[in-house]
Image (cartoon, rainbow, N blue to C red; front, top):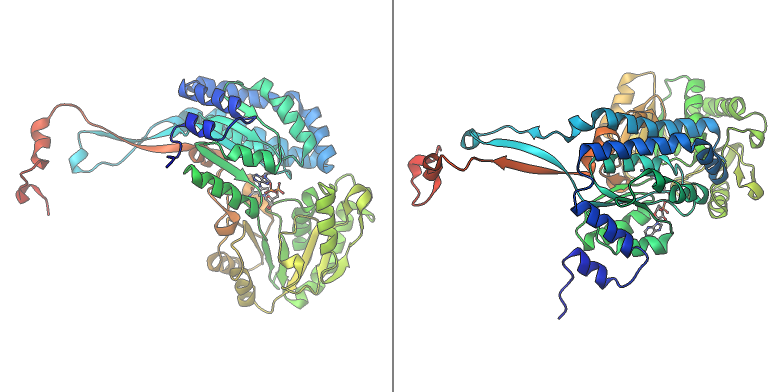
Length: 469
Ligand code: NAD
């Protein structure tokens, strides 16, 4: 019988010739040589990443506009400033994050030194989606390189223009013996995943997340999975409908709804719905004008395939606001759907577009029940003037993150871990959480060589007298 490959080289050889082999070997060798370990190296790379963002802002902005018709404001707040903020935070804290953490000791280890060392895993693979094509590749990269790893980045093939800048320009700002950007879709990603990595960080759909996790399992590679799902948004009767409508509309239609943490659907009473629909209409008109198609602030759907899928969802329930679409420029109007049944397609899959269904519930209990009989979402929102109501939703449900009385503001804080739970993912990142995610926490105890007299009381023949029971 053939024994499975055990070393990295054997694993490579077993997978035959493929386009990634040389790159991966180069990166592994650099890691083994210890290139990425010194703090100075990490600082240089982080600064290079910052320069990449600053010196190519125009180029990147144009690419984002071509991919998603992402405007300057949305690019600034959701792509550039978040990425730069993470770089700055890592630069400020790197030395402190890298420090050994002292650990508490017991009687038997009083004379030793016990600590947790944050050690790089080695060769890390980061796979990213298309919806925030800069942010979702650069923010994990900050954590991976701050932690001292070598990294392969695989941007999405769907956000083509941004992917092209990443593959052609980014490597010039990083040490190419330690970092590489590779392009490709499912087939190339599949080939890449046959290789052994020391850590895989994946952002994307739950469907592909399962494929990635299965591939990682073959090598026992640990993973972080940043996935998606349907994020509920409970709106209590006791709240100001216009304030809620402004906030929900802003976060639902940002990036044309293509946000993993966007409020996916509203749960409210029929009475609240009656007040909320005109308020949402008002917010949409104020934000994007009478004809949102002409607004420079509304993005477009990423591809024809995604456009067609979303157009299909416009047939669910009854259109209360918007509903227009035009395939020629992949435009979908900010839309509100009412009279939506739980069994309809729009309530089965993550919407990922500018469509907001409202589902009626008669009470808070019914809303919580509705949420809890579905997969655990990435984010959950509750709007109410009553703190108790918000607290109840928080206490009686589970989700990756939670925000009371607003949309996805929680993820703007690098002091909070960002990640899913259950079907919305596993693991988390942002700020120091990223550094920790990409570090192995090595348990270390250093004992001096002498004092054998003291330590020999533990050896056989055993004496119960020496046990402190
Ligand atoms: P996707 O899962 O289709 O693709 C993500 C990445 O996986 C891409 O780079 C793609 O090339 C690659 N991929 C596709 N098929 C593959 C395969 N068979 N094997 C290996 N890799 C493969 O996701 P998407 O359409 O790019 O993004 C949308 C999804 O991502 C949504 O579900 C959304 O909720 C989720 N998302 C999650 C977060 C988060 O932070 N949790 C952020 C953004 C998007």
